[in-house]
Image (tube, rainbow, N blue to C red):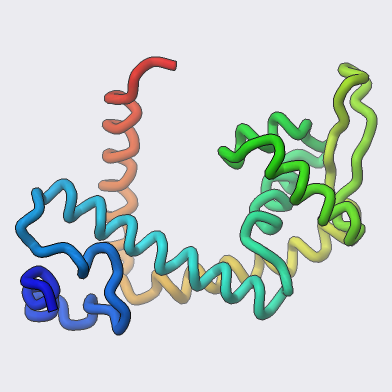
Length: 176
């Protein structure tokens, strides 16, 4: 055990995972900002990995496929590949591959874009909307379960603090 792992175990016994993560591999001598970053990253990774596993097990799908379908639920008329790429923060090539798979499964369809003949719109099919609704209900339940160990006031405080962090980080990013 590293010094930090020993320290964390005494401060928060339930925080020390059975398999060391990025945070518990730290020595505890790192600056607080780095330790905070490692804790946030560890929490995100832990939750994301669990969601990936549950989507794979219960719906035989992947998180990127679920995410793409989630974006399309907000755009009933469809979205261009470039819009999906921007919203999901991935390359157009990733979107094309995921869309090809979803189209093959009958969950999305490609439509001609009346305003731009060079591109097409991607939209959920009826089958895709029904499938996504089932996944969305399960996903919401999983998130509630995973975060349910925090008291409601702690969740509110964490939400507010992360909002502050997001805002201050955007303010420090170079202008694009």
